[in-house]
Length: 119
Image (cartoon, rainbow, N blue to C red; front, side, top):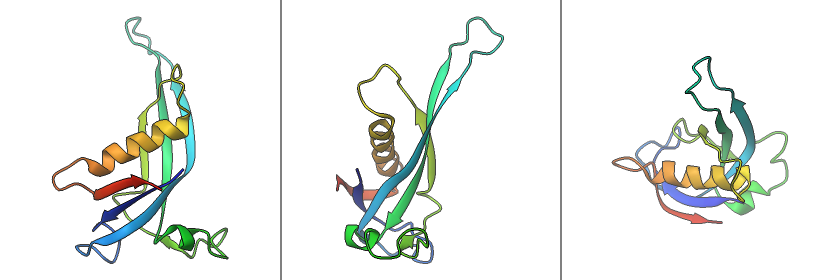
């Protein structure tokens, strides 16, 4: 799974729109937070995920991408996120995280990214 989008939030290129940025979620951690001592509080599930950015899919798959990571783009606005996780859903944690990432990128005024599409 991966997505592409246009953004002007890359480090060193702030204000310059870069088209077709390729993003993938590298890792997802699912955490269960137990209810507090308050009997009315419910158990909470969260996904924590890391986003890796590349110039394109071909750049992502270039020789030396891992472990050197020389082909990465950097963005403080698109890095690590967390979202609610539904353990009863038929969607995997990765699918739920990608859906959350797309929503986050499109949110805001102005949005972090535009032209968000599955890659």
